[in-house]
Length: 171
Length: 353
Image (tube, rainbow over all chains, first blue to last red; front, side, top):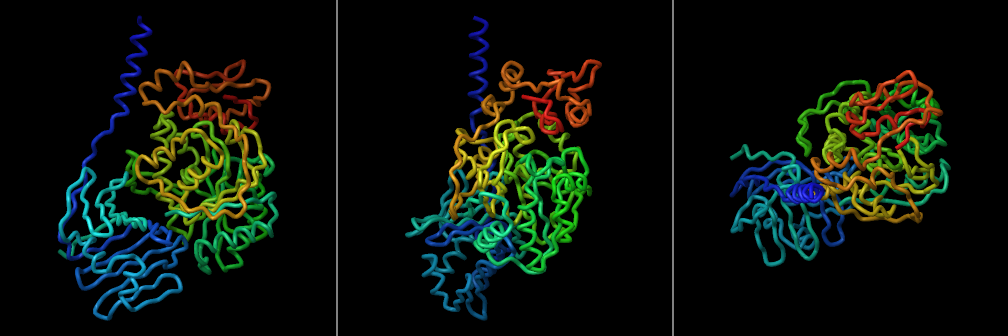
């Protein structure tokens, strides 16, 4: 009987330990105008599969800069939009026509900027927030290290930005 | 998404290895010229290359030659378990490579405090070398089993950044809690942030690794930009039944990235034997596991015939559970936290589990 009670106690304790603790979700700002950030980008989108550190700088809706680096510090992707125009550099490919961005990723740069700036209607979820588009969805949450994470999800794959640092000081 | 380039190499033939590395590195972009690179092999102790304990010197040579030819200044270092870095480099055969190619030594004897914002509860970590002193850190683990963690590969190898005897303190802090220890290992790995992890699995070790297991010709070389994804890939490749503590925690915390595999003729590895200690670790919560530990988990034992009385085990035991008695080594199993450091560091293989 004692053994049975002991085993039951162990099973009970094991069961309790398996219960998920509800962590606190990070608060997300809305209607961001100024954003500077850095972190890691993971992309598995259409034929592109890469990951690496990134820096992003945005002054919504006029200026945007995103640069993603490879393991040796080389630039994998460079996207810039400002008064001087648009520039996309990805490997050997270079484009100054903003339409190339849409062809490549399936959404316009202005949509991408709007998503990043937390503009438009979004719904609260247990993990954070979500924003639905016709062809894709944007999830705003956090990873296991409590870093802000934004993911663009569609049938083409996913692109995730995980922020080590985010500065909205311009606001 | 992470990338893994894996292929087969039957021997440590330097020209063949250089050819493999050149193609594999190209998958991750062009190597920067004139960069300052730190190579971090597995240098557990000063064992000869044939023992399968350390990253093979010819493996280090092949990569270092490519970097030197590219105009880079290359440094090699690690913090071994109990010896000096120089002594372990000498005995392992890596020092000769360093002399031939005029590579620098990183002795890993600094005390660099890093603020940690990772998944472990510890907010400060002290490293023996600052990864930020280098343009690139290239992590070069050996494919081996590990009696506590199951495998020592991508993530575990960067634990070598912790200065020598501080490693034992971490074992004591974590008290054999694989999950907590995994969180520390992962935080250290993220701070070190190696550009690439380049695995020496040509000759590896299974059974009771990482120091006294069975030396095996596995013929595997793998390169990845993500150490944790590489570890998960190895678990699949070696047909390990259940996820090991590191990958299990990485998956739970959303840190384990999917990886694309570039297969350059991977060998088929059969009957890779895991340590018996891992078979007896049921991923139970700490309270239950502690209760059952004394009943079921393997206790380290000493083979008096093999023991040379060097007291290395006594000195490295983080829990102070060992002492040398008049008739040989004495274990205090109540104090023992089952980190198996004694087994790992014993120079004669006298400690068994």
